Length: 149
Ligand code: FMN
Image 1 (tube, rainbow, N blue to C red):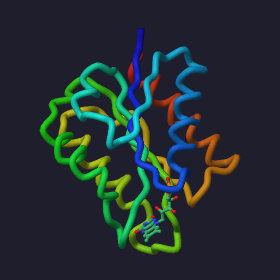
Image 2 (image 1 turned 135 degrees about the vertical axis):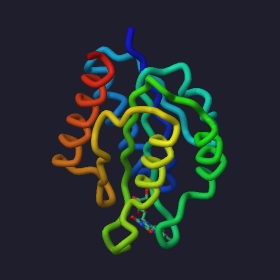
Image 3 (image 1 turned 45 degrees about the horizontal axis):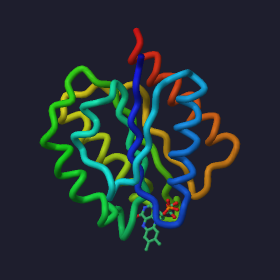
């Protein structure tokens, strides 16, 4: 059975909600999925999954959330060759030039692990609305297709 692991960082709830939308989309496709908040997660947990997903906000001026830093450093040490990954998250377009910068940082980190990108990153402006939910569902569909073909 195909398995997915979602790790998320969220301060005010937008990304927790996105993680929930992504989790439900996996469940709808009958994927065995587990979701963990980033400070409770270990980058090595991705070794147990076929599909690795990271959902995060961005802080400061394009800065990584403090609680994501250790996970990020550990992720760079993992060899995730053969796995499929995708990143997504909510930021705020007000931060021009830094919109969802941490989503991009994790995208690059996964590429360094040897994992294969299964779908383009999805970036959401603040809370997910109907079109964002559709984009997130399409993102999950692509990840599953990449992992099962
Ligand atoms: N969003 C960005 O896209 N880029 C930023 O550089 C950025 N900096 C922020 C700095 C501060 C002090 C705050 C409060 C928010 C910032 N944001 C930035 C917006 C958050 O990433 C956005 O509100 C996000 O939806 C929060 O997610 P959460 O509800 O899961 O915590």
